[in-house]
Structure formats: structure tokens, C-alpha cells
Length: 336
Length: 274
Image: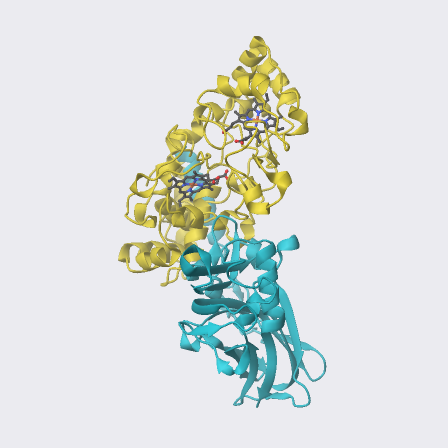
């Protein structure tokens, strides 16, 4: 090892004298798990760099994006909770106001084609404007946020280090936040290790996996555990929240919501778009005996998904294998 | 872990280390090489084209070209009888092209303008870098093309700081008209946020006009102008009184009707001026 270091030093000394190397931070690039599909996010328009990622990380944890400097993205998307909220049904924003939907975990965003439970946001870069300007979240205006950042020597320095310009723009803000989110990748669960041949399932887990493939995977599709479609899974006869309809105005979209990922699902309770179920048992009971009729109920759920007590147990054993404790403790993503 | 980190640093240094980096170092050149560190005099450049400026003048009027339209003034709508006072009137114009004498088009790069009646200079769109020559027509888009609505964060006129953007249903608010009217319900206010770029909700409209007998002569020093007329009263052509439709705040049928009425019959080419 020492030999290599000396060799490197020699290389530096003999290299072009005009190239001054100042290795500040280790290089960083997008991480693509081998068994995931190609990302949906157009990486070429915002290539991941260490500097931009670190800026995004600072911003994600900073309350500067909120009206009264009290709320950051991490307030509702905490690493300890796999970047979901702290096991609450709905989140509290500026002034303690609450919204109506459960905060989803923010990981594997690079593969997601649309965002929010109703899919209203079409691009990861355009996501941040939603919480920033939502009166019950950060309650700011984009103009004010950009003016605040431009008035701060601290932020000007941070943005300059990342983008090399003196004027901070909303595009830079959005792209930096995007880079941080792009690097939140969950692929370190026991399930992933089994898939890569580095571990194996117990008999119960395997039984659960088989059941899962039969009964759940049509919507919660591997390897991301969602197919990103909008479906009604029979929560209500009349939905209080119109879901996808709010975006498309199509009757056939009433009460449909984006199929959520099930990675880390046992760690990110409560469940469903409004956080109505606090335990996974309630969710399984819902599929087994609680599916309600609705004009837009998914055809595959017309008779629910009847499950015996054993089947529920096996499914739970399998879902547990989706917990990613590596992501939960990844230093690189923690509060800077 | 530490060893791996060191190896990474080592690899990085090795990459930086190769010394044969001669080439063209001018980013403006056609054969610019980002790997070159020392210029060896081989840069090649595009032939410089002489260019000039053209100004697109937007004259806002109410119903009749003789009646100037401005904010915070009360107007009566001739068809609905409503009294209307606008406090905000903003809209996007984009993708401007000028037709050359030989029938080819000059396309303005990064062609996005937010016209804001709050700002005096808002109604003059200065096109620079127009190649010298004679022009016989114009094409422009009212609204923001769908590509820019689905491609993530933008800059310039398309920055979200102008507030012309829907956060919860991604897309530009392409026309924002707000004000008061005694005929409006909801506390006497009207609010029209018109947008939509896909399927049946698409409002984006391309408009073209031929200049007629005269052509626009662009030279390096010319100050040619293209005059367009803009009549906000046309918003109400189909929907009628503010008491019928007083608020639009998302893409959909009302947005399509109001925006296309305005774009099609409220925005028109008037004349050019060399």
C-alpha cells in the first residue's frame, strides 16, 4: 500500500506542471445497482458531482427553504425513517399545520417516472417547488427563497463551489436537491443480498416470497416493488381524496393512487396515502377481508386477496427482508 | 475501506497525469477539445455572420385598437356587459421564428418571453442575433411548448421565481389574468390561471403571419419592429360573463376555451416598421 502512495506522489511530481491537483473531496458519481433498470431521471442533464451532491445535502437539511426557518426537507423525510416522516399519518409543516397525505419515503427516486400519490409532478427536478410553496409545508415563494439565498454569503459560497457562478438560480437549487435525492438508493436489504447470491431466504421467507410473487407482485413489481401505475386497492367506497383524478379530471381516475414501493415497508408505517393503517397486519387484513367496492377498484382485487393466518405470517417474514439498514445508517447521506 | 479510498485517489491521479494535451483550447472554436491543455494553434472557427436586432412590439388594447389596455383601469365588456378591472396580466410568448426571403426560417435560440403588464418594458421583446437579410413573415408560439413543461428545471423567463408555475401538477401557467368585477361571484374577484400542454388539455398555440408587401430589412444597425396587437377582452368570447366562469386554476376545458379564444382572436399581427 505504502508503495502505491509513493508511486502516486512521484506521478504527481512528474505530471504536467500546469495541472494543479487539489484533491478536496473524493469523486462521486451516480450509483446504478446491477439488478435495477436504467434510471428514468435524465442524468446527462445534471451529472452527479461531489460538489453538487454536497450542496444538495446541505439544502435538504436546511430550514432556509421554509418561511420561518423551522422546517427542512429532512423534518418530514428523516434518514432514521428511510426518508419518510417519523411514523405519523400526516406531516406537520410551518406553524404546525398538517397536510392530508402520508409522506412517502424518498429513495430510489431516480427510477420513478412521476411523484406524489397522484403523480402530479412529472420530473424530480420540479419536485422541490411543491413542499417549498405549500402553505402547510414550507410556505415560501420561490422568489423569496432565491432572494434569501442570494443575500447570504454562506449560501453564495456553497453554490459557487458547486456551480461556479455568483448568481444563485432556482434551477441550481432544484438540481442540487435532485442530486442528493438521486444518491438515496435502497438496494442493501437482505432480499437484495439473496438476489445477488450473497445470502439465502429461510423457509418462511421463501414461502412468503412465493406468495408475494403470486398475489402482490403484479402491482408491487420487483425490483423496485412498484410498477408506478395508478390503482384503486379498495380502501373506500367513496374516496375523500380523489387521487389521480385531481390531475387528469378523468372519472376513471377517481380514487386511484400511485402504487407505493414496499422496500423498507415495515420501517415506514403508517400505510396508504392517508396513513390510515398503523400496522402491516391491518394492511394484510385489508387485502384479505376489507377490500371495498369502488367503480375504479382494480379488477384483480374484485374478490380481495384472501389470506390464511399462515400466509399472512409468511408474507410478513418476506416483507421484513426488504428492510435496508445500510441505507438507514449511510454516513454520506446523514445531516452534514 | 481506507485502502479502497486510497486506490480511488491513486487512480484519479493517474488519470490526471498524462501529459500529451495539445489541441484547440478555445471553447468558442468548432474543434475545441476539453482534454487539451496547451493550445497548438489549430482552432477553427465558424464564419462570422453579421446580425442585427428586431423588436417585437406588443400593443395591448381593449376591444378596439384605439382604446389602450392597462392594469387597474375599469373596462366594460361589449358582449357580456361586465365591468372588469385587471390587476395582473401576464403571458408567455415563445419559439419565435422569422421567415427569410428565400423561404427558410431563422429560429431564435432559447426563445422564451414572459410578458408582464406590470413592467413597462414587458411589452417589447428584443430579438438580437438576427442574421442580416430580408424577412417576410413571423411564427411564434403562445404559451410554453410541451418539451419545456416536462424537462425539469429551466432558467431565464422560464424560472419558477415568476410564479407562473403549478407546483402540484407540473406545468407552466401560460396566461395569468386576475382582477375584480362587480359581476364576479367570490367576493368580486376573477382569477384565470390558464395552462395545459398535453392531450385534450393542450392550449399551446402556434401563430404565423406574413408581413405582406413590405419586408423587414435587418442590417447590423437597423431598428426594425414587428407590431402585434393583444386584446384581453377575447378571453371571454366563449365562456361569457365572469359570473359564469370566474376562476380557472388548472388545466382543463375552461382553460382550453379561454386560452384558445384569446390566442386565436385576441393576438394578431398588425404591421412591420423598418
